[in-house]
Length: 129
Image (tube, rainbow, N blue to C red; front, top):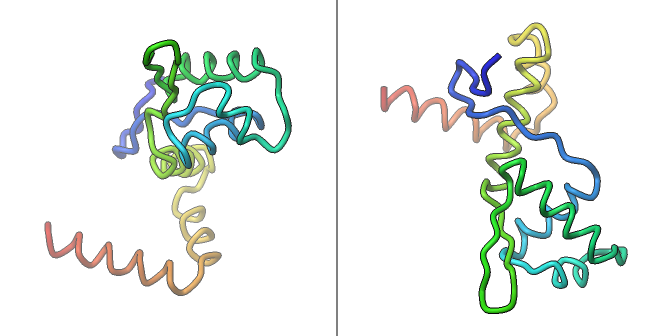
């Protein structure tokens, strides 16, 4: 099985554990950050080595890059929060069985403002094509 969706959704999403989600959230909100800055911004006080390991794992998964600046190492997200969310939604549609039913159930659950956003986007896309 390939990592790319045949509908152009990009690579499959990377599943994140709870601490990985927390670290990615901090990076998306405050990028770039050092390990110490992540610890300071965290609700709990995780160990330095724990955060360093999480960042190494996120880098291995292709979600985080690191850059040395002087004596510090800065970490930044490689994909935006929105890109990661879109990939997760695409994976749910692929894994969900009946794609059309999944899309319809999703649309039934969103509010009127989001429906207008979708409608406007689809109308503009139709005009462009």
